[in-house]
Length: 208
Picture 1 (cartoon, rainbow, N blue to C red):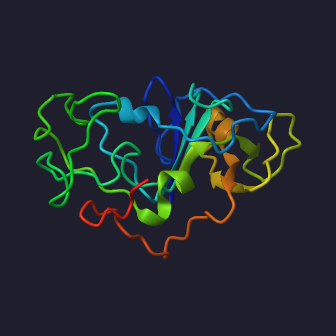
Picture 2 (cartoon, rainbow, N blue to C red):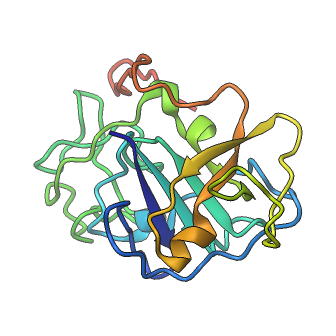
């Protein structure tokens, strides 16, 4: 089952599609400057966050890293800042793996402790859904019905991007204002049955 989450950045709130939405709506965008720029979801600065689920779509509104103010996490696994993940004891995966740390620090991503052995399991990224393909600045290009003529602000996807329906409405007002299509990179549509190769530190198959 593919799920959607609507995230209000700075507050670090996540909302499953089955839950009531409390986040305020993200502002619409009317230009495409910055679409496709890399972004690091602010949830990764939360020491208790262990990673995203590849079966979910996450929309982080009000992202100050993006000119569009929206960071899209489109069927991505793990943490952008930790390609190879870590074991449940806080040590790195594989003989050459290193434990995850909070971005910009030397702390464990789970407890904030400088001791990397204090932690929880963090899944490695999936090679076919690396951050370049699945995590970047985007904008809302259509409503839940695939239309852009309801008076709300929508963007036109730039060359190399397609407007894809990613977030379903669950009835709440804020959900309606975030549900719909977002600009995604061409050739990166998620296929649940496609190959999912875990990043492997010993093979260094997710370098760069």
